[in-house]
Amino acid sequence: MKNDSTTREHWGGSLGFVLAAAGSAIGLGNIWKFPYITGMNGGGAFVLVYLFCIILIGLPIMICEITLGRKTQKNPLGAFLAIAPHGTSTTRSIGSVFLLIALGLLCFGKFGLGLIFGVLAAFAFYFGWGSIGLVGVLTPFVIMSYYGTVGGWTFAYFIKGITQQLNISSTVEAQNIFNSFALNPFVAVFYQLMFTLLCGFVVWFGIKNGIELASKFLLPLLLLLLILLIMRSLTLPGAAAGVRFLLSPDFGKLTSEGVLIALGHAFFSLSLGMGAMLTYGSYLDSSKNIYIASLNIVFLDTLIALMAGLAIFPAVFAMQMNPEAGPGLVFQIMPVTFNAIGDNVGWLWSSLFFLLLFIAALTSGISLLEVCISCLIDEFHFKRHSAVFGVTLLVSIMGVLSTISVFDWEKIPWLEKIFLFLFNSTDASFFDAADNFSCNYLLPLGGLGISLFVGWVWGTRYAIDEIRKGGEQFSDVNFFTLLAGLKDDPNATRDSHSLTLGVILGIFIRFLSPICIIITFLHSIGWLKF
Image 1 (cartoon, rainbow, N blue to C red):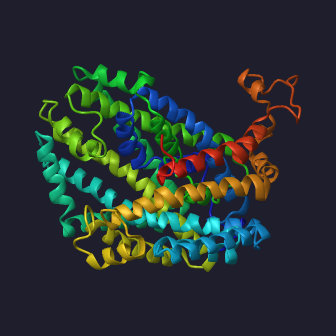
Image 2 (image 1 turned 90 degrees about the horizontal axis):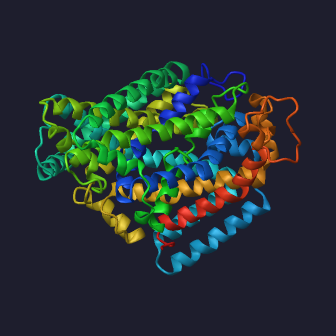
Image 3 (image 1 turned 90 degrees about the vertical axis):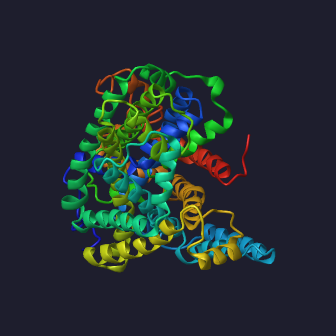
């Protein structure tokens, strides 16, 4: 497959693109993480802050990623190299700073961090601004190495549900079942490999016949399952308390730490900074409206997150469970909750719930693989089937390390020794180390790089010119004219110096979004505390 825009495969239509991109964004972060971090940070007040952060940081960067992909019709690495093919004095200066930091860290015995900064310096010198795109390709590979582990858990729990193995009456029993499963390397690895291979199977068939076709089936099914679970959850006695908890703001329970968590999750939940939106945007033709598509993706992503809360919290409150149970809310609290409903079909509701989780994980896993596959096709001229085989194989091998290391390093002590030597790591396992490295370092750096590149290197002027191709001058509509419902009024002011949507996007992407990402990054690595 050639990488020029005339032969590159494209989505069959706007709906296919929106569903595929929304499927990438709608992952375990929406259905697994969002409910429990909401529960731990005061409910409705956290939701309001999260929605504000989605608009402040998520939407502008999503628009930029899709625009960059559509403009270049390339993967993340190829996209940056297409616009800035050579290194500049700025990238060389950045590389020099990274090199000095690396040497300093090595002198103080920080071998792992020194190695990382040395690699970043090499990237900056050799690839220039393309190093941002390279990070965008490496990030989904690292994420998929442990994401497949959790995806395998959801698949296994769906099987346990339909075989009525989740008739659990206590959280202690649920924890024992989870531990016995997750710590069994043969069973856990089997499901992890099944999940990864299924993702590979979908991308094997390409964009229209693979990813788009699967998304048109999986996303409606996901919505249907959520609606069924919400209907059952809301009919339980005492469910109203869960609805109040989710939707009634209580700012007295919202801390500054909770605000930073909302800011970080708004960024991570949209699949930003990992090259997925850029890659999917590269399969989009110039006739599509990027503003409308991005709004639809954000809307679906946020809707699913809120619907997941409505499916979970009313049932949790009705069964008098703890809404602040943390990560264990899904695999340890929900099976007990569904079993306690008392209508003798708790196994059915558990099955539907974990099928929902599995679909969410699958649609995200597909996009993670496609980023790496697209890079091999565009930059190294692989055939799609060869690229799918190679990436799936490597990700599966990395995933096995994550799966067998869950909770501790006991079964792979040689890897633990390497990590201890390099990082003096306190992470409990390779799974945790990969999660920490990707979420706390790679994703924020990738998002920051995209924001700065579009805002200051490529330039918002050229980004807006690309957006205009399918936007019918949407970027030039006055913001207040749009709010007033006068967008199509010929007498409405369309002065180029007024506060248009394009002007707002430029301000956000050049200033507000980078500042928010830097704050999120400093918080995620523990340098910013309140």
